[in-house]
Length: 253
Image 1 (cartoon, rainbow, N blue to C red):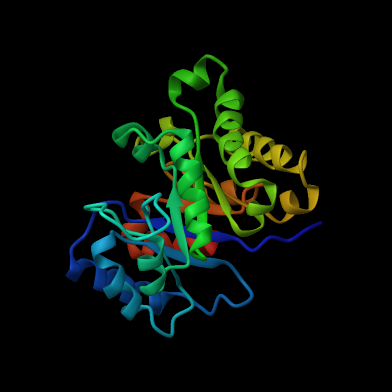
Image 2 (image 1 turned 135 degrees about the horizontal axis):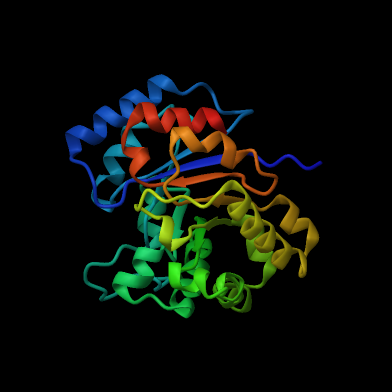
């Protein structure tokens, strides 16, 4: 049986103040044990707080990531955008791409997500590729076709070898911020499908790929979700803003 290192990532979205963020990071740093041989914790704050969070995490095993990046690989006249090179300079190791909120609210297409995935890797960042279906798509039995379409867009752009340095997060849109959670069996079924899709092109890469579950993960349900064979941790939203709740989720991993 292959052992994959669990990853528990906190997506802060557009929440918090500088003072609140410092208190949260301080509590997390105090509450976490060394993760050299255990789960990994990752924080993805708003862009404007990345530099401060990077400083607060100095000497801590907690990793740093961003919530988004520009698809353009180089500098240029892109007002309001943040490049992968800038994120790396500030200490980011990961970046989220393709989150359902970016797809739904800002019109990010599968093709644009694939471009951001490749750009992230060109700057040495590990992309966390979000995939997932809406409630309507689940109820009309389109979950697999949606996941397949979203993954194929990236595979077609970068090839399967790119997934040796990437993470996939399955986030059913109907369970994000709603309080509804996919059952462990529902989540496992999709995670296994994702791994099988990658395995069709390279079984070794598929075996080592971290696949996270995101969708109203809480301390109360994390242990049961993370016990599933193909669930390697979580991409956590609201619960990552409460230190003790996030630590409980981390301990479940």
